Image (cartoon, rainbow, N blue to C red; front, side):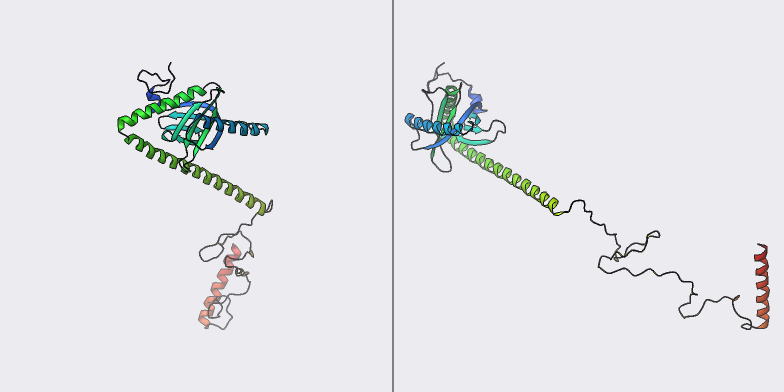
Length: 291
């Protein structure tokens, strides 16, 4: 299999064009990091970057830090660097911004590429460590370049502009997702702090007394079995005391006692009426006796 980067008609690549144009080729590798370089390409440029990042990685390794693992997704649109478990995109290197790609001939596990950052416009060299696939990953990126160049010629340059717009939208979506995740974590932290504050301010075992419900006139509903209570009403005033039952004779609104013909004294009525009342009184007494 010819693995040269030159564009020859009889050249055979490792993957089908559909795999790179409609999907992507995934690889797993260790990410040593990225560093700024002065030139967009060159073997010596990437060699210095590799030496610099290897030295920094040895220092971190001596401190107990491990080299992070990443997933690479290679397509004609670029190289995405993701966290393997969460699939969170850490870096999205668009293909038209990648200016150089090579594997280290002295260390077969190392491969690199240089990409121009979309925000700072600085050239960054990304360095990876893959024990078995370093050369294969480099060739896959080369094949993606070859297919992208062919599509560029077929579309007359319009496809490149479309890819730039799509890449810009993808980056915007990625930024919004990151911001949304940060806001969710912030809300969760605030809710946790609120719960802790409520628990710390309320005394243990205390029960808030439940006030009786009142009607629309701010009165406590009457219950025949309830005892008089000194619970204040909602407006803070004490309810009126319940009047006690009295054995005194009730009077009407004019102050007069209720009329009882049998309790009236003699001489209050004419003789004929008085005699009838006496007869009715005797009959009433006989009836109560027989009962």
